[in-house]
Image (cartoon, rainbow, N blue to C red; front, side):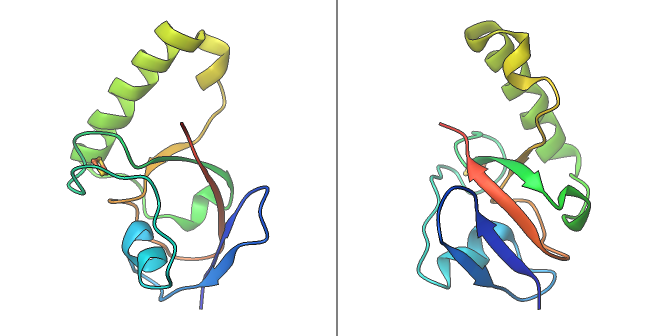
Length: 105
Ligand code: FES
């Protein structure tokens, strides 16, 4: 079973393969920041610091929201903030293998 780790913590969770990241952690008692849970608000954004290939590629809805977040972060934090950052939405990303994430505030 895939393992999801939260960077800079001792938290890591064994989850079902093909589960949605947010739901999988919620089922194990870990509630990530969230809003709409439908891929449009971006509140559930996380940075994937390891294992990005172990998340199913984003669909259109997730990709559009990620692009909007990248634009927003570039304006508010500078382009270096998003450069080389793998941003995903925990309410949309499907877990296929081991990943390490950190919520983006
Ligand atoms: S909670 Fe709104 S996009 Fe995930």
